[in-house]
Length: 275
Length: 289
Image (cartoon, rainbow over all chains, first blue to last red; front, side, top):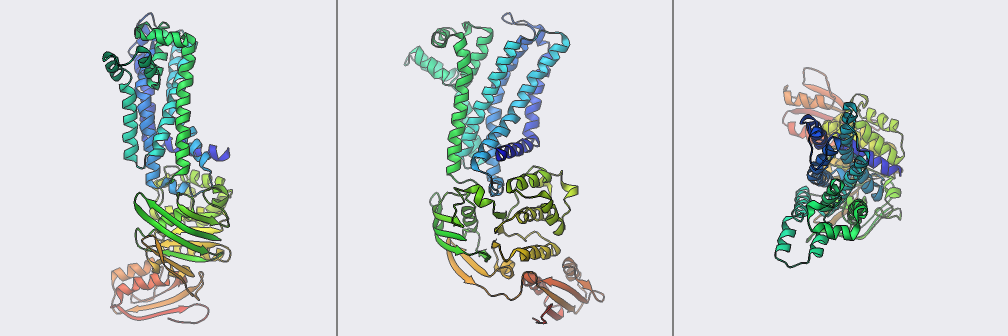
């Protein structure tokens, strides 16, 4: 446990000094600041106004930025450290591989989740100061959704880092993974359905295997519980899970994907060449 | 103490280590030499449990890969190239000390002996230190723990003559109970430090020889050199070795650490046309070379 925390602390300190972290924090803090600045809390969409409206927009933007940010910075840092000889030295110290790998994940998780969460807290703080009502239920679920999203893509990032032997390869692979998930959101699925080669159930199942789609649908479900904007797909989802069931699924499934990817990454890491 | 049984390692189709069989005993001081690509670094990484390979490596009967913390706890390692760590110096010291169960004050003390005062640089990122400072700090971290095996890759390459002298003294203090594996491209860099030479080429051991050296790691040589005319480059070189000018840059006197004498002679050989008198005398037993 001591080794795990020491490694996590090491990763936190290294990340806090890295430029990517400063940019990352600025992006999320900046989004909230800009949303307030442009008076988003006063605008109304689908009956949403105030902080709910802001949180809905914030989570949509975060869903677009967070996965690629987490994937690229994780693989750059992990594969980059290995390539630069950091692993050769630090892994010559008596630290267990489990403590090293999971400690790195823990440290990195804290570093990537905190700015996103801090931005949400900032939004709530500004709302409280301005006397805007805070939808605590929505705040809690969105926070959980963001925590799960960070865990999911961190796990995938660690798996890619364990598999790739160079920073360039790792970055390329991370980008391809993100692009594939993005394309499967709509374009490829639409194409498949238009050709009529798969049943709607299969297409929806394929969509729900994509963590990005799961997050998007969960975020939509919060302000559109009947998922009307999804059209016929909503029937499949709601028949299968129910409204509450889907909210739980949206938290559990991506966590399982992230943990499974990280566990597979650890198995590959501990069996292969470390530096 | 260290045993390599039929160790082989390949990267894709390239065989980097080929059936290495070696035994290295307690308190042996081994020079691991060979050109680039000979397999020295790969052998060291196998010994540190960092590579997966065919065959078996044991240190005191234990597998460094399977029993990492127990085995690596008794190994001090100095890499050839300092890692580009962004963490502050203080954190690197605390991290390694906490993992190895040593007192950070011991690392501070050793760094000070090597001529590196850590207090003003504790908050600086390790990567921002000069090459010599990084090397001194990594040596202090490696020697700051109760290591029974020291693995050093070109450890003195970036050290100034005074720090090299202290470094040899530090090694001398541990030579009776510590096994040392010192890797280098050139034998003359490390020959005076060791009592065994292992040369590698194309992933194989091509030479394994014991060497007799009557000069101890802490031995010293009194040196006096006279030159025919004053030469600024020679003056600079002498000053770098802390030699004293006995008269207008024409005659110099100083002390050369025993393990550094080959390096010193290599340096002075560049000025052989200038030198009119050269004496090197081992202090204590009166032998001269």
